[in-house]
Length: 180
Image 1: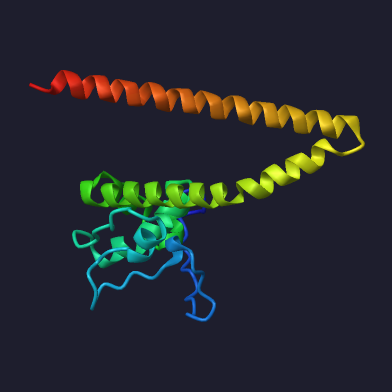
Image 2 (image 1 turned 180 degrees about the horizontal axis):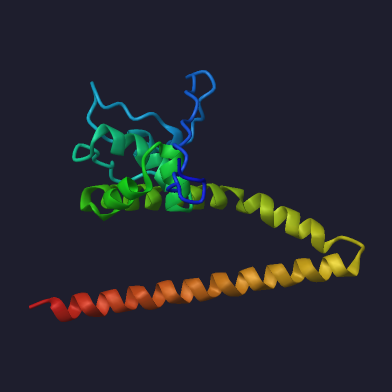
């Protein structure tokens, strides 16, 4: 009988996530259920939440890939995503090389980032109010930090506005050059 040092290392089977009931299921787009039957294979909840986003067509993906897609989009590493999705790491790596899967994943991540940006934009008035309150704080160190943040954000916003203007000018020049 071989000793433990001669045995091949076996990784533990991936843990399966407990089934969620619909009463307690999160309502975020990444946790939205994907229904392979009855409706077209898309993620309409995500598309509706993010405005003019295109729906993600899942018809080219297997049911396992469809189920894994939102999980892979949420987790930072392949190992974590494979374990949480209940698939092997090599399987997930193979799926990531598949153009249909990687395109769907990229679109899902892009739309998720857009949703996050929209939520952050909605918080802007509250953030500005908190910053204004901090500027009134009697502690000079807090006031100084608040002013530093305000000036830093203003500088970044101005730089972004200038970049947007430059980009618009370049796009206009390119379109003028392309006209016959």
